[in-house]
Image (cartoon, rainbow, N blue to C red; front, side):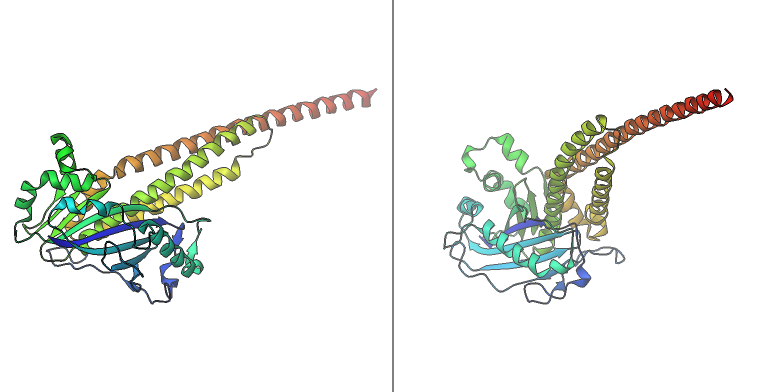
Length: 360
């Protein structure tokens, strides 16, 4: 078998990146990324085109092979790093070591991707809005791409005889140790358009087969799903901090005659705007793909990554925070109204006293 292992890394580095203002990335002129559209599709469906560069190959080798990198910049504030390394293997089990990639000098590929992203962020600093103070950890995903099955021309028939081996590769477990139930679950989400192509999508890794040699379109669909998972994960962490702050603000407002939650409520509303931008520009895959097969690949990845559950959880917690601040605001307003009523009564009593003593 021949192919390549593709490592996807998604970094949420800012609230927004103004891509039209990006003149260069790592001293290279970026170009709009495009994928080949050779299937039947509506011509009026737009394709989202992030900026992309292919920097010079990194020094060093991975598993004895040179590496290729591709960096993409999305206007939703995400930078993705893709690293590709070729291989030849006699069996799928021979690819298990590729789950823990390390360069010949001992550095992990995760650290290398982090360094690349840091350099990209420095190049983009004038085009970033709401840049993160520190570079967050990446959402990583591994894709095993096969372009030669050793003479087999029917990818779906090949999968039928290699289900256990495919499940073992994607779960980083010796195939003979897996139960039949686990094998069925790992291979449950798979997509195919022709007999020469196949995609099996699991939580931490995927297997993509295309005997024509072109896998960039499927990789792009998987990258978008991985990007969205990173966005929701970072949003969830931010909500944790806001939720803790909300309870503190509510407790302070109960002990004070003045509302201290207004500023936090403003931050909450800005956070909700970020979420709206995310759902508008990243969630709706039919905005990006007119290729329905790629949309089906994305829907499979969305199901495997539990993206709908992530989205529902974030929106529910946002609604709870909004309600919490509204209750706090109402309580403070009630306190203010009580103070005003007391002041009015006092002034009325003073006025009566002045009238009474004035007559005397």
